Image (cartoon, rainbow, N blue to C red):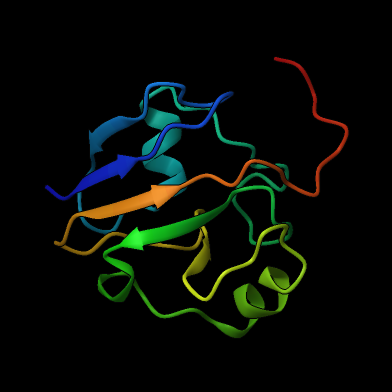
Length: 112
């Protein structure tokens, strides 16, 4: 199973983490399954940018971006060339390293 290394984020993962998930799992699903509660305002339907991550290693191993994801990423805070919506980035066999940006465009988060 591929490993997802999550770099430290002050709110979601202060110490950073390494989690594993089966190939074919989205990065967002893997994080949520491992109690890393990244924002996902559209419920993983590729309709917002709150689950935006920057893939620091393993970008090319992920599935290709589709047009919907590319269009939405244009609105993401802190967009970089290796940005993905974690709900649309599906693992292959390679390990990946991701960074959760400090901010998202979702200014009014719901408390759980």
